[in-house]
Length: 367
Image 1 (cartoon, rainbow, N blue to C red):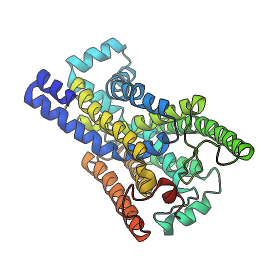
Image 2: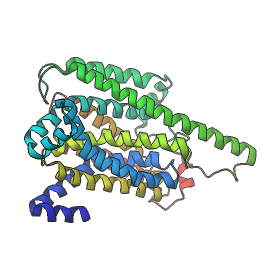
Image 3: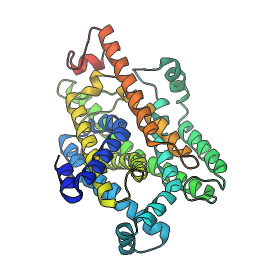
Image 4: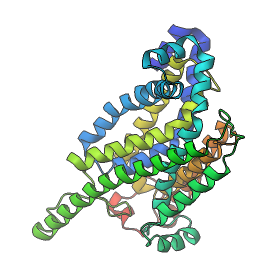
């Protein structure tokens, strides 16, 4: 409300409308991000959840929605940061042209990062299966540890080979750029995800040792999300999990930043509108964690991960072809809505008609 009021004071009714539209755009494009983030954030303790809402939101709003596009312009145009800021303020059409011209590299990086998240989810054996006919055989295939990486590299090679001279954003042959950026996205996922997973496994092993020594009753309380991950990560484990969350948020924000140019090329209106949406999504993430929504509606994570897979494919396709942001947003919303209704149906069949009607332990053990 403060952000919208500020927009009205600074830019009048037109600015208020633009910022409102951008906020809705960001929320619709990133709704699946809230569900994914909630699945990770619930593993962290209360302190790191607060960090996610404070320092994390500063990174999300000022870092990705304001600073990141300017940095892209500075790198693309080979100019200093001050020159890039002056360009963004005084020559908005050229600024927009340079940012959208960098889209192939941005889309390749974000697309590969998100694709790895989706593949690692779909190739893992889980207690709950939403689309059992698909997830059951894929879960068995996932016993091959490097399968996700192999498929991602094949997708990247095909994408780079098919990106010829007719590129939608910027023109010219972007094959090498797409290949390098895609590899960078893959490496980022493996490094950040691998380190956070290492510390998470270490903490889980310590908890298991406590269980064996003191008994299950005196051990720290844990929830299970189908992957055996414990709740209450702190220290190094939580720090790297926080970094992982920020990279996920960055990958989700790429399409929002690029799509915002369809509404305005004013960087301050863009930052405020997208920032309001980002804050809403982060608040929604914490709400989902504290209400235990992912435990009550067990297929929500599935729907969000399928939405991530769809977004990854869309990002790679947009390197060459234009796809309207409405389509991108609707796909995620539809998949999450379907997974929500499937969860409701499952709860009713098991005599658990809604969230809060059964305890979290009952839901998590009701396979």
